[in-house]
Image (tube, rainbow, N blue to C red; front, side, top):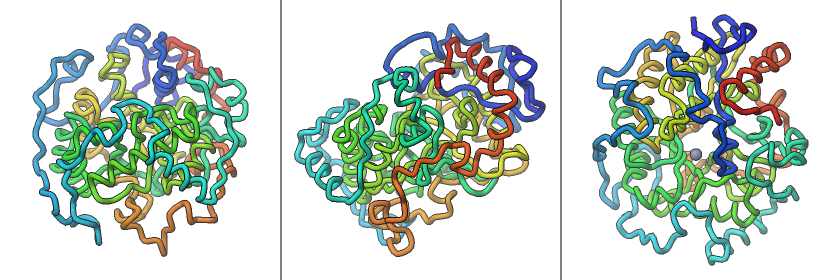
Length: 457
Ligand SMILES: [Zn+2]
């Protein structure tokens, strides 16, 4: 039996079926770059208001009381294994030998954590390639920062021709938002590599777990050896843009540059190019999808069963203090409850991060140990494998083109054939039964907890 936060109105208590309620404050906030009260520490109830149960924890876990914003930095750990240039990967077949990352010159790449300029020869070449791909880019206006509330015209169209996921959860046929088999968890970590990624890698190695890492190009330049360790260990490497912008707020050329530079730096470090990407903040519409398709990238988002029930632990907000460890673990309990509920028929993809020490501490100390002890068992694997494809298909050069053609040559995939989430992805069973009855109450709960109104969708 999962516990439900005491502040919620009675109608929200749905027995064993509980619902994650935290995502959009951070998403809107991050997208706008604005502060505001949403998701702030002051708006959160005291930590004691959150409750959770865990089947197991890591005996060496950092105490929950120490997983807080501004905690002293822990000693970081070296990678357990590094790989010499020229080493041949064994986890994928027919892969080229590992490049030498010491030959990378940061001056040959865009500035760190800034949207890439579009006048470079590289971006100009990628623009030409997109233009000659045969893919039509829909004429959808660039969004203003701030998500749905700041783009009312786009929001009104968000479930139609735009299919704007971060606004309404609209899922297109090409989007990967879950794993087909129930109790299968497509494990993902975003925004690295970072100083704390080796801690996560060491735990994953100890438990023989593999993940998908959606990496930020800027940070690949800073930590190429970590990226190589992930790849060589059998984790899936995928694109998470160069500088982590909200892609619907960028021009076509900027989107091409953000995806292109990320693909390039990963290829330069690994020798292979990812076939999958995750839009930062889940911010994708049919314009972004078409550009990604023209660049041979398939979108992976995360599971969402209603506007307020998304598979996001909100671990990212631990670092800033916008949430607490107890709240994150309650969110995790809600997600577990959803994933195992009889009305939820697929596996799931969860949003987590390896950028900050707090996120890694909660993953290795609590979430993963609990998941490993869960009964019934979760099957935990990278997204490419949870969708029943071989790891080779995660990379353009190793992909089996005869059975799995890259998007740009897959004529059967129709950009513009947007499908609202309520009928699109096959993962919405719980949402269909939940939304009509308690949607307004859920919305009220979100408003109460986040200190902001999110019902502008
Ligand atoms: Zn991210």
